[in-house]
Amino acid sequence: MPIILVGFLGKLFGPVGLVLYAWKGELPWVFGWVNVTNDLIWLVPFAIILYYSWKQESKA
Image (cartoon, rainbow, N blue to C red; front, top):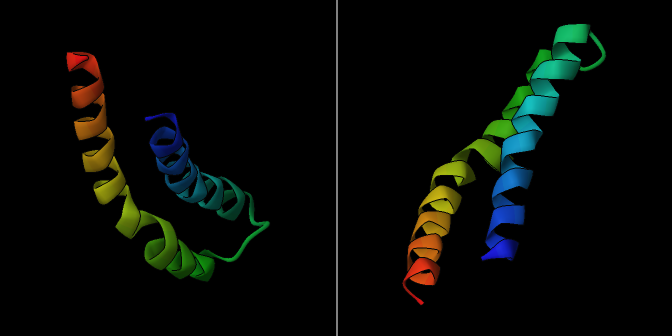
């Protein structure tokens, strides 16, 4: 489960970093398309996998 959590956090912090640095003007907003295709699409699958692995681990 820890490796799944690391993957999920990586996909979560990518968009957070984009918003932070784009808001400061250090990164163009158009770079957000990279985040959509690279991070945001994978958040839901990682969340589902993380949920089921946590559920399975809590049974043991």
